Image (cartoon, rainbow, N blue to C red; front, side, top):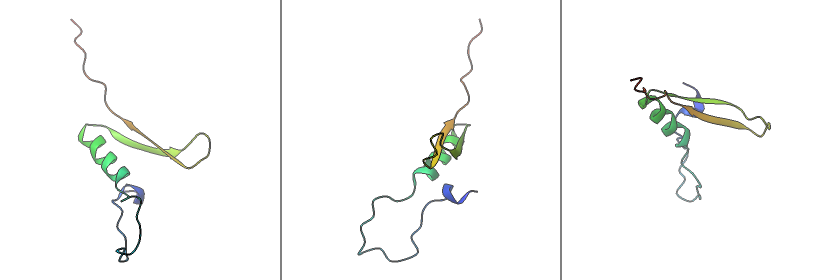
Length: 65
């Protein structure tokens, strides 16, 4: 598993530090996508400004009658 998909764990005591996030967004998104039969796709953004992510889910079955 890619490191960015693992839940973030701080290696130090952060009681005296202000934390703006928990680092769980990609981990939760990945788990949810897999639970729905899809996947989380990571890659370079088109504008070169870092990492981009998208969720790909299977299309629901349609009634062909």
